[in-house]
Image 1: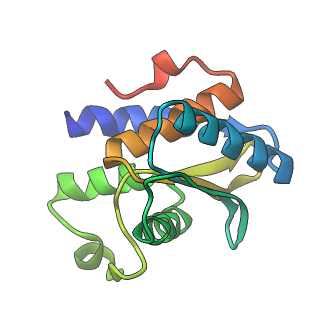
Image 2: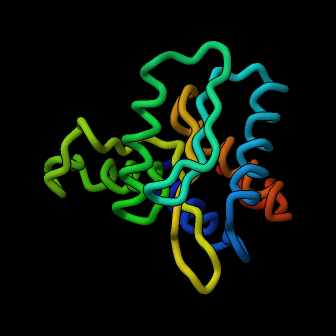
Length: 163
């Protein structure tokens, strides 16, 4: 894995994967699509789609543990704070040789720079929520979210996936 190339690709993902509108029905469709992908692949993940401060979709699949919702909460807090994917923040910190605590004074109890949370960006409105997956290695969590976003928004995943 080359961190700089992943970071560049994530920036492209974030600028491309934007919704024309986002409401409860959109959140349910995205969450359901993620759940279908995960069930078809027998993935042990928790899925969370939310407007900041308001959960709109949640699913815990077989093989998950009580730790997974905590990872979701901490990843989602990070995306809410920085309006970027949690994987992008993690890579940026890795490249800088720093941590969330060192650079921003953020507690590991409430924030984690681990991949799997992606901002819900609405055109002409900005980032108003997030979609999060927890249960796989961080790069795979991130990619599952991106794949589902591509399917929901009509983008070719092969052009946006990480190398």
